[in-house]
Image (cartoon, rainbow, N blue to C red):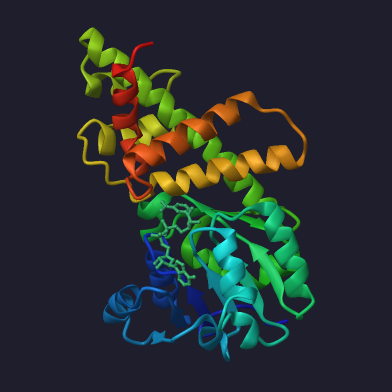
Amino acid sequence: MTTLSPPATIAFIGLGMMGRPMASRLAEAGFKLRLYDLSQKAVSDFICAHPMALATASAKAAVQGADAVITMLPDGKIVRQALIEGRDSAREGMAAGMLAIDMSSSNPVDTQKLARDLAALGVALLDAPVSGGVKRAIDGSLSIMVGGNAADLERARPAFAAMGKTITLCGPAGAGHALKALNNYLSAAGLVAMCEALVVGEAFGLDPGTMVDVFNSSTGKSNATEVKGRQFVVPRNFAAGFTTGLMAKDLRTASEVANHLQLNMPGLKQAVAYWADASGKLGGSADHTEIFRYAEMLAEEES
Ligand code: NAD
């Protein structure tokens, strides 16, 4: 088992808002990259910035000759398609001994099954979802939550170190994905609380910027108040780079985990319904900080 150190070759699948800056960090660290994304533009834009990276036409082609494959795709169902079930999936090009790393926010129960299916092919899987958003993907300071085998994490550590600052082994396969979904429940709940507080405060005549500043020096402080209030919500630019649709998916995932464990979580159920409705009304591609506009819309309805 060789360590994934530069100039090892990594197949990177999914060059969206997060995948692109994460793959950039790997290229800058000296890894050789073989790229695949459904969007040819996503690949060609990346290659303009990193001409040494190689474009490929499928997941199957991307993994050929690679030491590891990283997926940064919308959800675990798409990851499964790309790795083992879809047409021209990675399965057809993967060699035994390869390491697969799913950095998407996927469903942990599906991840446990994927880990078993890949193990049958001689491929170890790490789930390694991230937190920190586009800004921290760009500066390589993501929080990476790892599920899987400790020895496999050590193999992958140099690649993780290029993308993240905090690398935590959370437990066996699926543990990283479970923790990520639960983290996003807290993140989504904090954002809704801040937005509702701002709507009420503004109606009372308070200045929203002053409100955020006071939250940040008081017990109401959260990631929403510190990172999203002054930056994206108060100026109404709604440019955090994470969509409402993906947040709704993460909440569904957290709820599916609770259901799988037969745990009744009424607050979580409410959050799922809130974000599903918001995603329908704002559009799934709306930035998740636009949840403020949704809170404003609801405020106008009869209570
Ligand atoms: P995105 O929609 O910007 O990017 C997804 C990319 O995957 C796109 O380039 C798309 O073309 C590509 N793609 C989709 N289906 C594909 C397929 N079958 N084969 C190949 N490529 C395919 O999403 P994102 O914001 O980069 O998020 C990616 C993952 O990271 C999601 O699971 C998300 O929940 C998670 N995440 C996002 C953020 C954020 O701030 N945006 C933060 C943490 C985690």
